[in-house]
Amino acid sequence: MVFEQYLEQKNIDSEKFLWENPESFQELKVVYNQMHPESFTAQKKFLINKLRRKYQLKTF
Figure (spheres, rainbow, N blue to C red):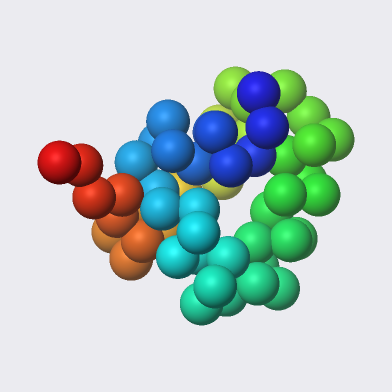
């Protein structure tokens, strides 16, 4: 799974996140690509929750 798919699975709008905060997006993408998705979730849980609130994926 690529980072963008992971963000969508966590209900985070990856395009909006990339557009508004490209540095943070790239930093997290590098870290994500170096570890297992479950380990990434465990390590970045609080950050993921903040991102979810700020860049919530709109579902229709």
